[in-house]
Length: 227
Image (cartoon, rainbow, N blue to C red; front, top):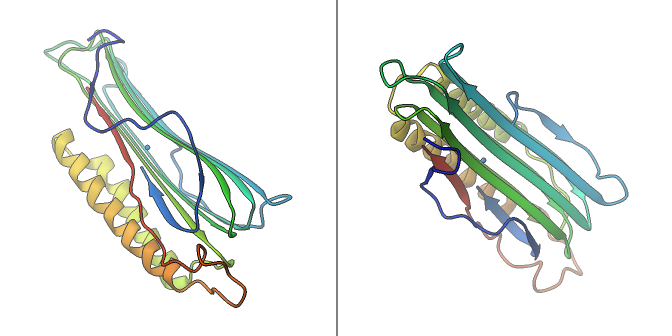
């Protein structure tokens, strides 16, 4: 398939969005290893970037990469979060096709009542002269915004680690890419539920505006591309 010919299986939001919101924003696709960080953003500005990339070709016909990163930023007034999954297959024959899968989960927590957020989440799959190849890119971005700072507790961290292990386990799966996509969606649903429950326990305290006092809101954006 030509570079410019690929099939998309999810809505494509605009390249970036700037929002002002208190609550929980969960958005949906690049890195291979997951990380957890707990830190105050420098000068109140947080910048987080994660990605997962794969390339399958005649020399390496099976390619899989996943990223599962957690960034706990504390109190911020501005934040930028970028998450991307890119999967490419190229040059394999119809008799011996390639398979390329990239999945990226990015979790960012932040606190503040007037946070200016620029969040970018991308998933792209490309088959290049690889008509019988299976190529899948899935991007999930979860951004938790609360009025007062909080950190994910030990129980939540253990549950996230378990979800990460199950995401890693998809590496050995021989299921069709449609089933891999279904399993990734199920894991993302678990993350969303966990973060929604955690955000609901964040302290509000006195002097919080009506907007900030709203119950956490969960908006899930998921970006998948499949060729």
